[in-house]
Image (cartoon, rainbow over all chains, first blue to last red; front, side):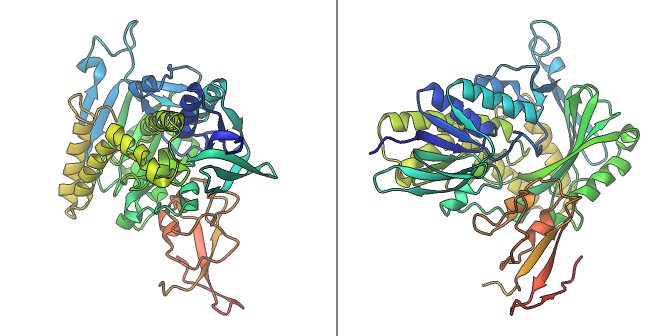
Length: 391
Length: 79
């Protein structure tokens, strides 16, 4: 085999891509990380919640550079405003709190700064990073390597590598290059919209508001955003409503049991995105290619949370590649199934279980019953005794 | 397979928040995208499932049917 430009070329420098890159480079692989954007994290399509555990798991020390606000628990509401609170400052007072020696449960991060921080950490681990560089396609070759076509600014570059990692998000093109079945059902993609607002009080809790009336097919949320700001958002499934998310969000703000709380809110930023409430991709690999993060649909199907699953999955992918390439094993699709099997064992099987729970709820056509089920499931999901605590 | 006529999408860019939901739901092959991370607006879509219009959180995607002889566009029933 000729001398290759890189061992691994990663398309997309979000949390999944940059975490894959960092762990791969730390273990000695030669890694190129590209992203077509000029500013990582933007446009923001995410609420930014991640547990402290998830950060620690991938060697990231919580840093003021990217943290908006610390989180200490959850409040889950039903449609009328009754709530279940899991405040870990009370549930586990010796462990969680603001006092010295105690810790937060999690954080709401600034995605622009968080993504840049993770990319910087990868770069310091020896990864080459090219911004303003888009992946255009790739070609596997019979001798086992592949060529990746990139456009850096206006220049086309063909680079050789052992493997390409698609970390290009929910709109992933890399999976489509290899002909993978990446299509998501309209019933499993929530259209989300959120406002960053001033003038709304929060209490260090992630607030989840269930109920078909406010967010058909999804839920609404109020998250603390630091400096006295909050984010108010919701996701809806298009087949369960005739209106876009925007109309639902306006109604939630002006007509819900929070109308009084929100009456002085002033919108500082508008963000949105598609959030998969879906199963992971059934096939996340092809010849000389694997997918990570949103591109592999590594997203929690109940909460829509994708940060923990992205960084955890990135670490799994990197560890797999390091071992696999180190052992000089083939990179044909059959051999790469081992990546998916590893991911399923460490994370994916739990996500499939969550998907089944979620599907059971939303297959119930009786709206009041379904509302009760969703409220109960969400309340249980965030409780200290939940079996899914670490996802 | 689809009996739909090809459509040409247009996007109200002032309302677009570049969220990418339209690309995420799009069943087209790789590359049916605009330089602004939306579905393509410079060529017809022959699938015409209109899922992108359904998912758009700010309801800012419209279409018109492209005549099959591709001579003149026919005005579609725009919502």
